[in-house]
Length: 269
Image 1 (cartoon, one colour):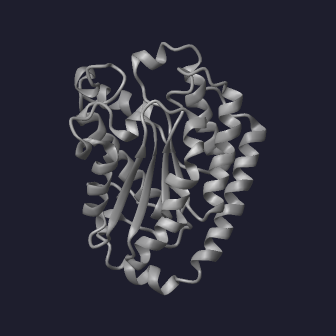
Image 2: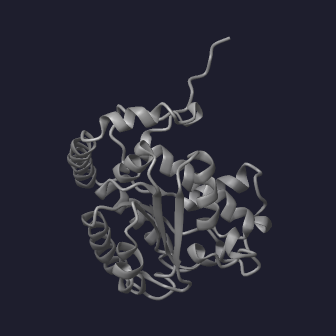
Image 3: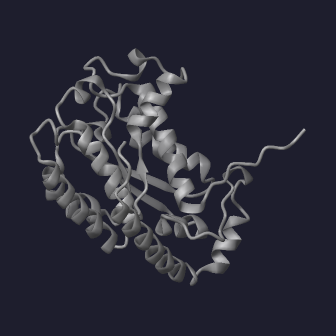
């Protein structure tokens, strides 16, 4: 990955400061609820309520023990193509994982994935399927079909930036999910530019990005799955094992960005 442009880095830093200041002001209205509910959370989650979260609306729901609604927005790998059943797709697995981790909180993950869609297709249903569902969080998986459908990188960046801002203006947190790693997609000219674009948009707007490509490479490298186990027979989509690991990674990312889940310090012997 090429070094980040200095202007982009400064803009991202300023944007992060302004956004966190606004989030901190919003969260000041519920300090008692935050502290009270934090006492009820499992110690293993390690929530630090003194740090302003990157997902303030999710943090608020967790803090007061209110229902948490998430929209999984995207194309075929959100829909669950390659999974043996809808219950094995990553949104369904994510719902189960979060309900387990957030004891007592009613978590609903709505699957709004439609296979084959590129960014313009998804924008046509943004108001109906995403904003209209009134979630606290949107996980937007994007950038996979665009190089396959001939979308220019300039157009992708422009409309994605605008859509992220629209989602935020509606009072909804957002997490981006980059395109998957797979030989079929990587052999498409320019596909890597869309992966980089998703990461750059995340840095520019201070939006968390699930780096799915890196995750998938890591699962194979660490022996969690073989390449054959990771992919469905079509060689493009993930199979059940990959979706399960993706859901687990997404749950960890959401909890970390909602409340700074901390890794315990090693104890010296």
